[in-house]
Image (cartoon, rainbow, N blue to C red; front, side, top):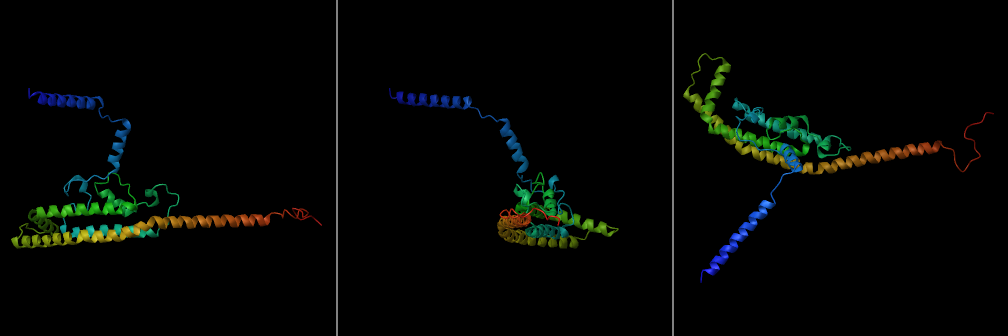
Length: 262
């Protein structure tokens, strides 16, 4: 007789499980055409992080996707510096008062668009100046991935680097001295260590300054639009004043509207 409570609890649990399963089956999750279209639109607009490898197809357009490792730091810093300089120059451009969206009000410059097209994260290169930080951070991520991968394969990549230099120099023999390989490996290791220590902090400082100035950019544009509107109102009032001066005075109705012949 002591087993009745146990049987009662077990039967209650089974009934609750059956009821919950029936509720789930009776209300299945359905995807409507609107939700599917919304998901597809978000998939096209949102940035997607790609695999961290310079050998993937998406990174083939980047300047450090191939050999010539000695020029990687110069190419990276020149490209990032050019985009930052272009963004600072955009502060001096007149505001587009008839813009309806942020992308129209602050369109991206040619250098920012070019960099965005190189990155696989942007499926479409429709960017604005407000996204300069995201583009540069993704560019930094790709650069650090390339450095890390170069470090993993440092010895074979350094050997290929030396072979490429010999071929470009037109050397008859492709025999590489071990001392040259050790020197190349040591130099590349120093370069990678230096870039890891300087690339990210430098970009963070630049984005901090650019972000502080960018917060005031919409207000600056609004003030320019208000100034233009005030000039238009002043010009309209001036034209109205000139037109009223040419009209006959209403309180002096005896005066003719035109000069009479003598």
